[in-house]
Image 1: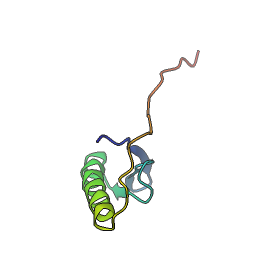
Image 2: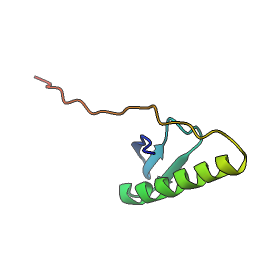
Image 3: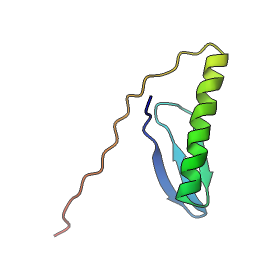
Image 4: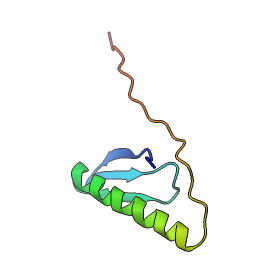
Length: 71
């Protein structure tokens, strides 16, 4: 499955969350490190859900960037 991840700059680096997996978050000083931690967080989150017999949510969030002109 492929989940959308939202990354945001912070005063100390970056934070990230997965809208389709509430509570699945990560933060690190660099975007690359945040990406790595987010992959681990998703894997761990899904594994815990499986262990507790929770239904794994199907990804539904769609993210897109749209370019607009400021002139």
